[in-house]
Image (tube, rainbow, N blue to C red):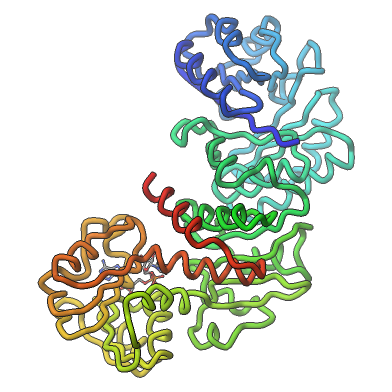
Length: 489
Ligand code: NAP
């Protein structure tokens, strides 16, 4: 059974009441973090409005709470605390009361303690109803001891809540219940998360469908740094749903890609028994992963980057779906690539895949980059000319491609080319997909050019990944719409 516990933490009793009522609507369990209240009053009033089982928590500041509380104050609180379904009591405070409602908890906000098994044993030796251990994941491999803890508790017949906090620990929040965790915590709103890495209950249900994940669920995910704001979980999970495939796709925030592949991915060396089927790979790991694979398709080898990994029995196979995904949206606007004159702005990974794909189609390519040393290096790889971006004019080009982050994130207000520079070009393709309608595309429309959106490429390359993992064709419209909805949000 999957339980989602929404944790609410408010300064005033009125705010706590209103959040707890909202939480009742989307949670299976509501945690009231009463240590957040500036004044402890009227808790019964709040409890009478909560229609779900309640965990009551009164956490001292030194253990991640919001109050300075000495031992005596904590003991007094629990002696007179309202009788909710569960009380979360830290392991240093042995309750002098009914253990049957106690979740005995241990938190480590700095990392995974070396003596994690001993901590579990100490907590499990108490008569507490549930053992809870929350540690901080500094890299994704820190999820391994947490999953192992859940396995061990299952074998011991103990109910356990085990979480790796932080973005790198997200897998434990999404997959924990399917592996036997008593519950997973969630936030009501993104900004009201009560612990690092906590996502909303709405996301857990409508993006990851945690209540449908079981031990047979095919697991896929995105490997990169950063990955938390990627729309790929929306795209791929929508594809799983519409294709009726029991699969889930989640972000893996990976710093050390070698260790990740060794300890969590490669079937011959991994320390985790899980139904991992495939990975998308994004910056900065697209080239680094090559050396950890057993087979690489020739296209990916030539491009020098893998963006898709398939786990096949005891082997890892690498593919590049960026090149085909890059070409696919152009087929709607370009009749023939033969002799097409393309200008690519940028000299990074996307420019590399785009150059390779266009040359395969017999197009001619010129690179434009702010750093001509990098443009020259990429130009030499593919034997194509390059120019400096600063004085570029694109008249006469059939296709102008933006393969820089300009127009997105911190560069949202910048354009790689103005309408004046684009005048006389036929088509502009912005690989940036967030926002969907970039400033460059607006400039291009002003200059009378046809336009192609980066989101189309994102979906096309994801579509190919999905086919490699499942052998099925996904619903591209569902993928596009779920990504667009996430970007609009
Ligand atoms: P990358 O490897 O980091 O390369 C980025 C390129 O942009 C580099 O040549 C970089 O030049 C240049 N650049 C960065 N900031 C710049 C600035 N302020 N002015 C001019 N040039 C600048 O990144 P990437 O993987 O190629 O990705 C590039 C863009 O394509 C990103 O926005 C990414 O999201 C997008 N993309 C989209 C898709 C899709 O499916 N739609 C797929 C892949 C990539 P320096 O080396 O001088 O910094």
